[in-house]
Image (cartoon, rainbow, N blue to C red; front, side, top):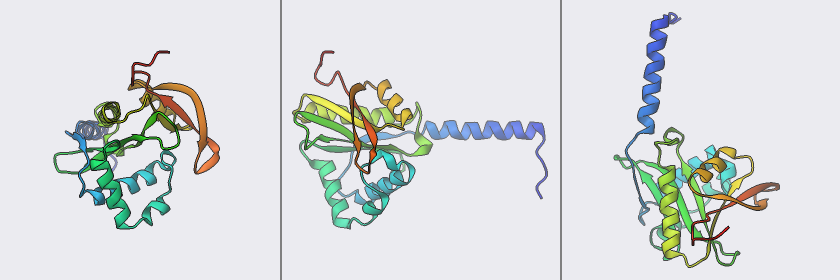
Length: 201
């Protein structure tokens, strides 16, 4: 049996743990567009995201795991080179992916694009992490390359933390809710980006 820590030892351990968390939060990163050959990285991070935050996505871990390599390659090529859709990733100096965010038109909603697939690994969330820069990169791409008048995103009604984050980076409630595709008894809260085309009101 390990001996109990003294109060001084416990305090030192707490300080060490806090330092480790702060160090993780301040990991240097670069936000950039995905490149065509990074399908393995995309697959790994998407599956991690579906484990960690399944209600943030419109598909399941099982369905994504069953996708053939060709599907992941096609998604990655599209995210890297499509004219009006893109996937951005945050990468640390060693090449590890810390997060991602995408922008694309909404096929069934005229004159609308959306930010989608936003995810940051748990160790890199918070004010020093890449979430805000990822969303900013996706918003900027949508503004420059997607010829629509409105930019939105959907957040599960239970994910109040994500809703608060999106409000901090410039989104606001649109007043709309839609059924969550994996469980129509639940809803997605639709947020809009009012400064996308200098919208009024």
